Image (spheres, one colour):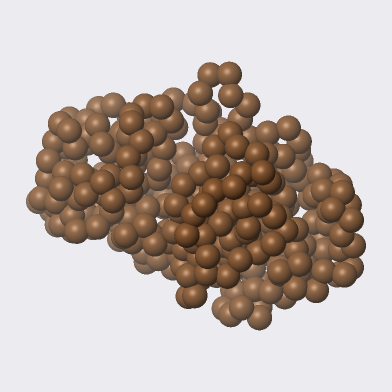
Length: 327
């Protein structure tokens, strides 16, 4: 069976094409990804008998902390690593063809937001800038370059400079996207307030012990008030993936056509759920040279139209034995 190319993946337009491509990718990775091959064998599943997405096993995301999850023998071009506190074992995602990542986030941005050249991109990502190997920094840097705008750029802790830039953008009535890690956005609005209703504020998650965790409604209310906007946008992505989902408000995310979220029973990882809360499984067909079928440690709910929300995390729990009573 042939491996789908970029043209096939990034032109997926309906569920039939998605399912056909997903089964092609599954067969390729079941053969060529040693970690995934062994995992499937351990479940006594014969890949030849997998005929639908519902039968595809999802690799627990923890394998990225201890193994090389690769479906390609090509040389590794870049290694993305997850953030973590001192002493934590972090995930490592080896990417043999980084152009898949670039095409994925560039196409997704165009689908959700239009032409990148219409934007000034401001990135407030201090904790990510302070380490190497962040896939988020790679994406933000590329979007800044693609915007071809001299006002686009990164900010570390220079909040006054960011405030001045936001005032400049507001006065010039320029379409502006501020992408920021959650704790840094909160730190910023404690010092400065705006009434910049045209501004798009996109939070990427991430407290990592920097601040007290807040529920999404409280967080977004605080940020809306601080920036003077009606809604807070969000990005849902992770080190182990090459695609992101986006929310334009209320914490409801939508995937690009080559990505899908499915929930699983928290007590039976092989049992998939319909329209109920459960563990979040991600199909990311752009992740073709690694593993496209990942069982995350997030809890979420998928709706009938394919949109979803994230309800929390399993954090340090044994997923198989974790009986979380969520609606």
